[in-house]
Image 1 (cartoon, helix red, strand yellow):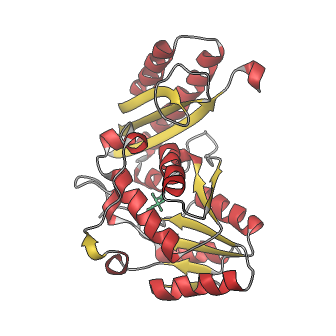
Image 2 (cartoon, rainbow, N blue to C red):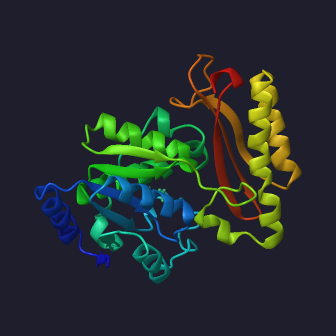
Length: 283
Ligand code: PAF
């Protein structure tokens, strides 16, 4: 049975003991409201580790003033029950005051990778993510950490955080888990009314069109317009629908891996998604 830990010192001590005993430690950071996408990360961590810690912490510093921090679903008992079905050793659910003992007086500043796309629409978001992720990596000094590809830009931020700050943790990015109609699993899907849920699949159709038109060599700007229109036709207010370099997230012309990234609101709910693009000949 998983041990629930609130105290950061105890959490860190458990991980250091496990490491001293020669165990491989896996870590899955989450904000709770767990869905099958999170559980897939946990399963992968369990497959690849001797012991696994999952954090459940809704991080106030990554939400903007008009975002959904208060409304964000909190359902610890249900999350715990789900995690009990997996072979997880520790559930780390600290208090905000223990993660931010001096408030948000220390913050990681990001340039480049955190500036564009989500960073433009949600100023300060990636600073908040990078700060809490660094704190969590210090408190849960695991060998590997598991993140979902749905939040692609977040995975690039975490990759750069690890590289630039010379952290000794390995990032594993796992594929997006989807509903039967293709909608990416997200804790925010629970906000959708049944009509919004039906129309939300427009975000997936935009990505499917991007794939198809990319393979047909349509110019990028035209593909981006089609993606945007596909979402708008389903009632999305589109924040961005772009094709960029998958590593730098810049709209470069170089021949590296490209990714289509989309984000927008349907009603009051904000959804994001993405897909890597490859030509038939590269498959
Ligand atoms: O992806 C999330 O759930 C959050 O951004 C994370 C990585 C747990 C940091 O709060």
